[in-house]
Image 1 (cartoon, rainbow, N blue to C red):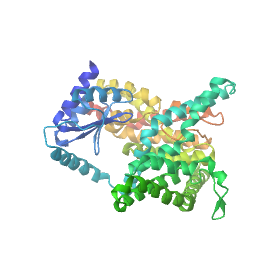
Image 2 (cartoon, helix red, strand yellow; image 1 turned 90 degrees about the vertical axis):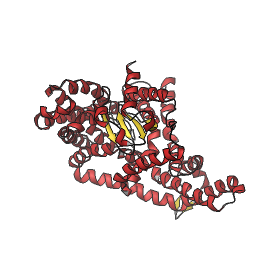
Image 3 (cartoon, one colour; image 1 turned 120 degrees about the vertical axis):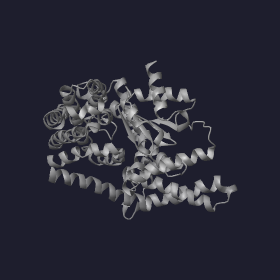
Image 4 (cartoon, rainbow, N blue to C red; image 1 turned 60 degrees about the vertical axis):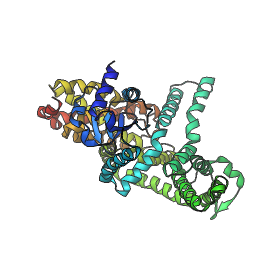
Length: 462
């Protein structure tokens, strides 16, 4: 009943049914496309019990937290009589509905429509649907490796089966990335999946061919090559459809697309992708060699502002390339310290504040925070207060400096953070990683307690 009540309140404060176009959600946020944002009662939404924060972008994003968001989305869809992502039936004509919705969306897209941000958003849309699989398989792989480190015999049947399951996604990740990339750019997903397999297919060694003096090898150029090649699939396919007769389109277009992009992949994309991948790895290693803990501090301290924009998902190709090239991902544990700084800051605020509403919000947001999901803390606590967001970033940087200093690597490529990421730590440095988390907690706590929070900041929670 409480969930049903919250769902009804959200619908009402969004301007009621006639103002809602579509409803969807990600891991922590309800995402609602509205006709007229002026009808949305933002201030009242922020004060609604159960709502942790509001983000205004091309959609209205209501931060509800993991688990809760899927329940509330389902309740809202039941009330509206729609499925997730489906357009709400409206009394307006379909033309008016589309026109109004597009005007609202375009108005807010224009604010952040720089080429770099749009590029990262595209990358994010490719990888966000894959995150549940990446998280699940990554944690399972970490559990298997942790069990082996604790002395469990890896030859027993259950260990072999779990290890096999955990590797399935990563063995064929290029197919999923290829499909999502081609779909995102307006092509046929299965063709992108085929090209992804072309890049990573281990059978390529059987061809015994050389191009530009180098033998063909599976995975050259890594995920970077897959992204480029899959984008070319969409580009070539769309242009072929303009010239191929409709009666032959279903036969000719896919075949010509595969021929043209397949050859381009071997002769252009993989060599270029290889150079880019090597550049990413070399640049990171150089930064760590020169900067060490200082570089770790800067990377961690600046990560939360990237999360704030939702552009952090654009880093997944870099995480993947570092994992493939170095045998472990050293960037993710550094960035994970940023969320730990948020946790420390929130605990400091919880201890200092006398504001009853703020004090009641923090415990619910802390639980996902410990698990590495920092958005509830960001949007419900530190960002509304202002200065604590800065002290959280600075405190998390201390953990990032430590993690960089002790050279921790993980077997994950994204989606996992906080305490659970410890399960994926390589070279048995589990305790060192947790020490970094603790340092970030303490750093965020001390800086916020001493400099980040004053009681008058909480007046907006009254």
